[in-house]
Image 1 (cartoon, rainbow over the protein chains, first blue to last red):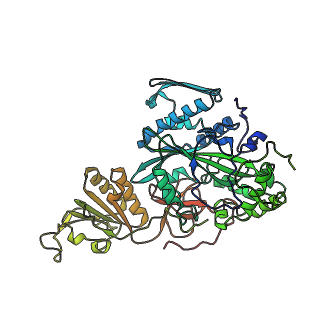
Image 2 (spheres, rainbow over the protein chains, first blue to last red; image 1 turned 120 degrees about the vertical axis):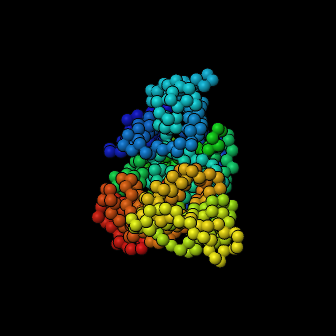
Image 3 (cartoon, chains in turn blue, orange; image 1 turned 60 degrees about the vertical axis):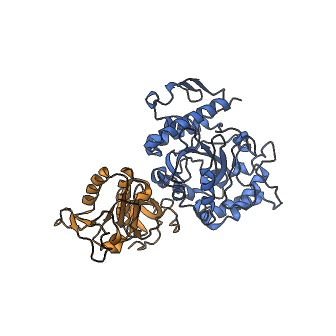
Length: 355
Length: 206
């Protein structure tokens, strides 16, 4: 199926980003229950599930071209958003191979990979790229392999080296992040880079997750969802640019909050890489305004309950403190209190009209 | 914003000579009695060096071997080689040359303020030492080096919960999030959302 891209939408300045009805219906809604707490909510990353966003190793949607353009803008300002330590070159090539193979298999109408031994040709038609290169020889590509391919993918990526019974975040492409800094965290162990997350350490979440990931197998990727909220459809909510986006939080009013406040969901996927034994961590970001989310009845009700009852420390860590009450007040009229089935499926095939 | 139980903040234990090492070097950012900073030095039967920062130009870093202490196990303890350096950069410069010559079996121990010990650890890592071959302990002031996440400037000697960045002037909240690579804590602008809206300044890291 050919995807209709929206190349001119923006994630800054006038914020022309929006979701089509179909994009709202495939949104990976993250709350299967009325209450939210941290957990190791990891499942096999296989086709199927509540959202078509899970159907391919790397999801490509209508925002693909615009997101790649946004990434290029961020990197032009701050090239340190892409950083890979020198011992990770094998993992760079592993990543390039995995993404090219996956894109070409999942979306043959848009991407083609031709392999003849180590002579490869990559065609990315949405971005107008066609390059022939020698696999394993970085001098034959215009950019280092990890940067080259992750500039052509939606979402952030990090590379985890495995040694000393631990994972080290020894590289990444991080331009669409929820307030964490690769430049600061690069080289950290698993527990160190998760240091700022409240409550989850005490619950043993990171100990269990690390044990699980150290045994991650090649060919058996896993995924989980994470979430936060973002004012305006802004992808670059980096700590680096917090002085630029922080003031957005004070622009919300009861009149504009439905349009401006977005649920930000990260589809996180983890792949064991074959040559390097490193782990590729994909952090694919989806944004949906709360006025669009309430057009799915079960989502509007559930989001209201989750936000209303959120643990204060989590609410603070996710940066919602200034506007949470206003958001709950916006959502309350959409929630009749009826019992909801467990799960995240939208349970309707078309969106309700905007109220 | 200032979350107090962040897990990247290092936890230090008292140093002890690693019996699996064949050569040991203890470095300190101030003169301290060796027995105060590390256990087992008087019983070590392998060569041990002790380098300290004396903070005076009157010293010249020449080695001064001293005989084994009289209370050491007879015939067992090796002599301690001591050097005094004029300042931290003087010691680190000499250390980088020593690390370039070292081989398997070397153990490095750093004691002092956080900025110092993690700078030593960074040199060790760059020289190829494993994490377990370089041990760190805290002594002295708790003042912090703070990395401004906005402009990448490191501001030294921060003792308060809020500090003005030496680079961009932003009022930074000093978070407990610590990078061993940068040997610094993270600083994030405190009033980014509402300029001028600043929490009270507290003396937290004397």
